[in-house]
Image (cartoon, rainbow, N blue to C red; front, side, top):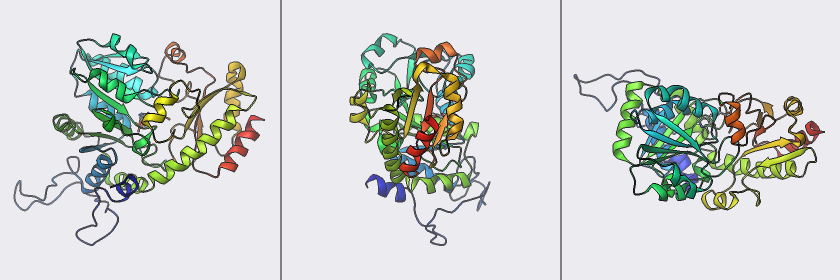
Amino acid sequence: MKFATKAIHAGITPDPATGAIMTPIYQTTTYVQQAPGEHKGYEYSRSQNPTRDALQNNLAALENGKFGLAFASGLAATDAILKTLKPGDEVLSTNDLYGGTYRIFTKLFEQYGLKFKFVTMTDADTLEQHLSDQTRLIWIETPTNPMMHIIDIKAVTDLVKQRDIKVAVDNTFATPYLQLPLDLGADLVMHSVTKYIGGHSDVIMGALVLNDQEWAEDLQFIQNASGAVPGPQDCFLALRGIKTLHLRMQRHCENAASVAHFLKQHPKVDKVFWPGFEDHPNHQVAKNQMQDFGGMISFTLKGDDIEEAKSLMTRFQYFQLAESLGGVESLCGHPASMTHASIPREERIKSGLVDSLIRMSVGIEDIEDLLEDLKQALE
Ligand code: P1T
């Protein structure tokens, strides 16, 4: 089954009771048993729910994986992965990543004895020097949030193939429409479903997809034991969003390419970070492992003028100033004070995240209106 067909059909069957073509929202906490322990596979909705099952199967199919798990948020999904590690285990992570992921690593799980090292992964050959006997997990975010670095997933997985080290990829920016980490050798894919997969800025949710049965069973145990599960209504909204994921992503990519090229030639703009440019340092890797370059762009202004950057963000008509990304509407944000404020400034600067950096989530509006908006705000 090809991607667009999977988005609409995979894991979804018409409701056996009524034939309803849309997966029903099983808004129930519990299920009646015929006798103690005798039931239809559903006991309690923290453990199983049919609407969530449909979504989990659909997500697994989209990522070419066997097991899908949905969580109450992207960070709840990350939390579950970290709970499969033991004190003393070490995680090597990209040094540019979503601020909330950095926060759960350093502020929560360091105190339970996990160790985190943040390293540049754009050159996989230099990664080897950071590996130790304690390294158990490599955490890749690609494209990175917000600097749009691209990590070569296959090169990293090849490097650790013979070792007891798993590779997890946060595929939030790319989505399975553009990039399939499991096919490139990764062990697990993580999503903030909140973003492109949901696609309509109305659901907070996370997901994991993987092939390894033992790890999947551990994660299913944690999903139930810790209980950070999404409700059935949100699962329905995510399923509905996914049905147009391929169409939305095509327009996000097209619009972002136009916005990136417009910004690059504008006299007030200094640097534009978008992997579609031939002079982006990881352009070739992006071309190899992604179908297109995605809908996210970051840029700085000449003179690294933070006041002008802040003022600019209030002058847009369509690029609304807000956290998050991946919805149909265009957003802009200021990572240093918003999404990445929990990363210490010295760390941010080291990975290139300067104070004047502006991040854009380019939506699927008419491109002429978006370019007009950028023009009027920059002038
Ligand atoms: O917000 P939540 O669903 O918990 O997902 C966290 C998360 C994980 N990974 C990446 C790459 C993300 O971008 C996020 C959330 N990011 C934002 C809210 C943001 O504006 O960048």
